[in-house]
Image 1 (tube, one colour):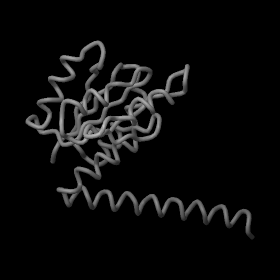
Image 2: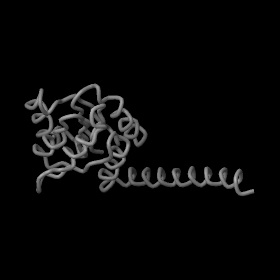
Image 3: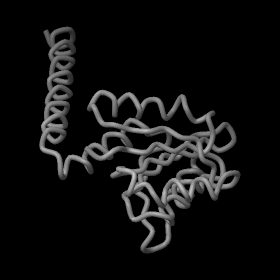
Length: 164
């Protein structure tokens, strides 16, 4: 199975990113986590990303807030799928990071999830990898079914309490 690279602009993003790391662990997807800044370590970030395919990666997740250029800088240096996680901050709530992540020039796409949406970034990475991995595809199907069952059980409890 291909690996997922998770890059964050700062270790302060780790509490958000951990939600995605946990999803990847649950699916059994191999992954690596790194701190690379688009602004403070651009050469190291570019070096990692430009050799990612050769190093066994199939998807890159990039999380950044404030001047959220990491996902775009990553996408500029690879043709692997890049998933951006705009990270919230106290000044703007992450709306600036969302715009910086989603507004990419034609030909350099970044799939962007919700602000602080690390779990969905990991689910999307799993879906991308599942295109060529039937075992992972079945895990995704099973997870969706478990989610359906959980919601129906909550519905049953609400109906029992309020519709009796």
